[in-house]
Image (cartoon, rainbow, N blue to C red; front, top):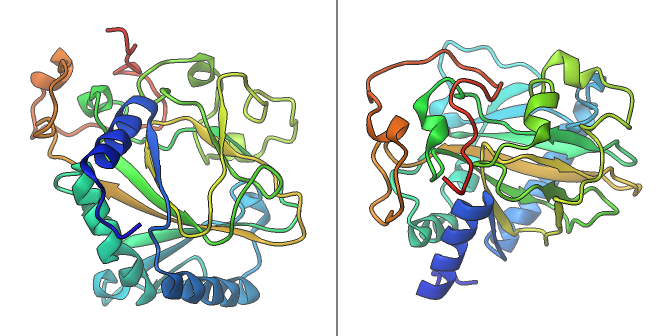
Length: 286
């Protein structure tokens, strides 16, 4: 992929993101950056073993672009700055693809999360990462917060590929009422793999990817990952972005707009919440 999508490819990717909650764009990351990230992440994990409390995620290391690191902030093992983050965030091919998809007003958080499932690591539980459920922004039929992620190795079910439940960013299912809040102490403490947080589901699909493929996901999407059954680490680089200017719809939007969104006060603030209450997950039929 040369970074410029055809109109058909762009419309297909945009439709998948809006309808299913995710889209995969192959071959986006340059080979030289991919190789540098492999070496860099290997160096990080040589000095920083995975904390057992992050065993399901694999790790939870937050790295900020040097340009955005506050001068008075003290770095630690899990939060530090590195110039390589700018290379990830500012990739010309990635930016061109996002523009082709119509991801308007895209605003990077200027940091990445390094998530590495070690050899023979356990599965990642089902969860959604949205933290603004008390806001009418939760009801938008388009995304307002997305992740842009890359695996540094080819992934499949054997080494812990991503799995998703398409449409759960706007369709409520049983897991929304069962799961503890994502990444909180309750779900991190689970030991029973027969818990619904870990089960295989008939409404889920695997998303195997090649190293350097870009996956874009709506923060509201229910997703998880298979266990790593190999003797090699499986590493993911994830960067959060805000997109579009709530409550305004994308310029290309032609569908209905929920009343909670159209009448929202853009200046209002809401208490953050990971629990999908307040504004319910929309039924796509409505």
